[in-house]
Length: 420
Image (tube, rainbow, N blue to C red):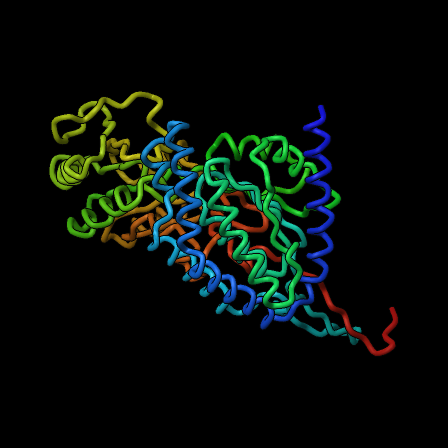
């Protein structure tokens, strides 16, 4: 019981401090925020050895916990990935500040001038699993959008996240901004998550970034509004008019570049007219690349394919595994996707523009792609510098959530002694 009381007190203190910091941050200048992010980037690069050492502790924790190879890859930080964190911080620093942007302006016959102006949300709680780079991405995007943030990283990335968070604090202090603008929950205790979900007096929105279990927990138990980053059940439909080289390049990249990210392809739908030709070639190439194929009965492919079961349809593997089946036409492909996807990202490979329009018009995923790898489902690749997640809901933010999506708006109404 004592632990619960201490966790409650600790989280309430984080909330109070975040609320105060958010009020100061809301009026911070664009130059201050950019300076803080650039100084944080300097600190990350200067501390790269310490960050990698901290990450080694997390990797050992992950090994003892029995994490899969894909999850260990998500957890890993090496110098190249630290450089990626630095690049992301600088990219966000260099973006146009969304806060204060006049989104619309008009004059009314009454004499009123009305502006709709972008404002911060306030305090954001971010709950995420093993990827330590999210500490930097989420902290930076919240800062850029004038929001204070309470970060609750996964237990696996505990030490890495602390090392990265310390660099963000250095950046804030260098720019004269409150250190409490970016806070990290200093415990692995799951009670802290439960507390964060109900802090309606201090937290304005929760962003969960992780697997189905985490997101489901947040959606069930949160009393604070949620931007849900649901699992990436990503489909690629290979149409009968697909270009063979484009299809080969895209499918291999979409599945094998990094298997443990939410944009990795999880199910391949192949038009029946090309199942014996291009479809078989694609499956053979995937198999040769080390991908385990769970195939529907009768699908032509290499020796060694595994027979698919009902559990394979609508599944996020986050591993070197892909489900595959043939479909009679684009209508069947769309119907299948609608029944099994998570409205995250879906792709069509075709040279038929009518098929593209049909696919784009009838499917309602947050991201729809044509002849492009689904690994591009990423805020950084969308020009946002980074992302806090891929929102799969339909309210407020959808798709990659960058700084602009972490804002709301207010109306500024000007008159001249105007009465009604």
